Image (cartoon, rainbow, N blue to C red):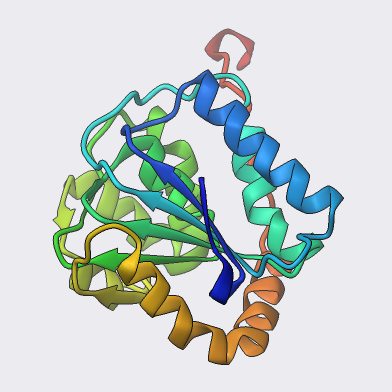
Length: 209
């Protein structure tokens, strides 16, 4: 975890695809700290997906609560959450990214809808709220791999930027983005408050009459 002090940004670097109990716990601790301290000068929380690719598709315990806390951070604090995509985004990574305030993609990134339908429940719900459930269903059924520009055309990605080593690209982007911070925060906050929550409870077929 690193801090870009000039932009008031906290960067959480994900070096492995997917989520495990340790990463869920670590991110949860960061979120609780920001909420409890009213962010303490932090205006951006950037999740740097440094290592893309296929990862675990089954969500570990606590994943749903962590995703909800990430999405709600914009309501309770002055923090805008950004998912910074460098490589392939799929499964739980793509699901999590879509629940951040916005996604920024570097040119080599890609967005995959491959996976078992039930494992993509959270991604389907997040996509549906943004682009409509009919379009989300077609995307997931198509098993497409979207380029960053295609994802931007669908409004899944806010901006596409050149690939940059380390955190140079993040720092440069935030230097520009912070100029419209107030308006962006107000828009993202209103969007989140208008969204219904996602019910991620396991579906037990035996309980269906």
